[in-house]
Length: 517
Ligand SMILES: C[S@@+](CC[C@H](N)C(=O)[O-])C[C@H]1O[C@@H](n2cnc3c(N)ncnc32)[C@H](O)[C@@H]1O
Image (tube, rainbow, N blue to C red; front, side):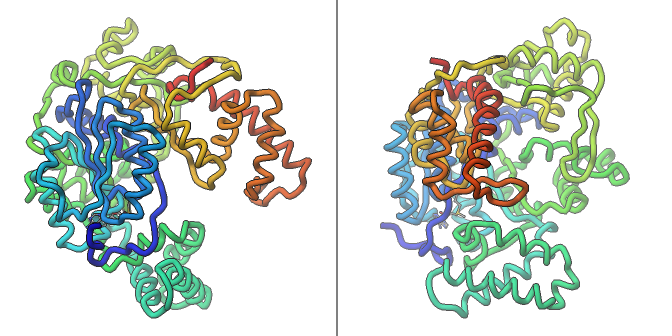
């Protein structure tokens, strides 16, 4: 058994979570839209996750990418035991997990086209960060991509004192990390409600406390009780990975690569006149008050200066309309700026992609788009993805089916295992798609409806889901209040089943998760 990581809590297990930003298709797409050649994946690839926790990202991505080899590392044996169980239940022969400290990885681990670490970099000591940087330097294959997430400045500036007070108060208390976290939260609410001057001077921090109360205490313990906790400026992190020989490529979600979607028009002059991304990222974080970043770095990146290079080297992304019913003009606000999508190019893209997914070269050949210069076309497609009109998939996605018969099945053993354990579990359930190369989240109640549909078909579906709901003790909400009346609950269940079969089920069929029997 590996020694517990110095300063990192191990007495409380973390919570499972799937994050689409960690998918190879997402990392590859960020590289591509930033003109960096992504690693090829069709003939296989290797993916390393550092600090995989309960491993839901690792297992979901392994199920969605059978041609890849996935290796997770975590120091906490309770975490890795759970990952091992889920690997076995999902019959994932392409995934494994190592119980190890980052400083003790086996020498023969080899190199990886992808390395990802989410929820780790801000929460470990500088010594552990140095170990991570050494792994990045040695284990990332040339041309490979690394994804790192971290708490960012300046968004964390007014919240850092909250972390400080939680940790200091928890240290005074008895019990395990969960109990100490609960006590610390109660104290935080007390000083907020009694109007400690910090909260009067920082009203956003006062409101933030309400958000904390809605979170899982296990998450809060891992977020706030570790000895080492740092929020970084982008330039700090770029500097550290720079010393490991990695170059900044871009960030996730996709819209964060478009400064005009993140920065109000009055600040945009700097971005128009400065091409140094290391400078513009820092200004963008200030203008958008960024509190969390997902950054992609590359080792020995090969630049694709022209769209022709992209069409030659990275034309394996399938673009499709993200959901039915999108019409132009389409307005979107991604936090700071409201943008409007309109015009003939976007209309032609919507029309072309409504019929099914297409690659960039296929879009360029569509009659209505043939006159659009390739660079403008690529920009419109990428901006459409950034604004949520289109999604990107690793493989072809079929067009929207108007109706799906209720006789359906789930091909992937991983998805069957997840659905059996997580439906009605109180958190979203991500199912793997071998078509898109990533996971797609359902609400836990929708997951229960799908599970019932698969187990026993559509006859009596509403009554079965209602019975399951009643047994689980989980309540449905109406106008923010739990529904206690049985007849009213049954009516809500009926509406939910109807909406699921009409809307979510066809989407799951399109994504290749559910197959029509
Ligand atoms: C906040 S959790 C994030 C887990 C997972 N990536 C997620 O987002 O769900 C951080 C994980 O890093 C692991 N960890 C911390 N320090 C480590 C070290 N030095 N070596 C290996 N794993 C470590 C912890 O055990 C924990 O599971």
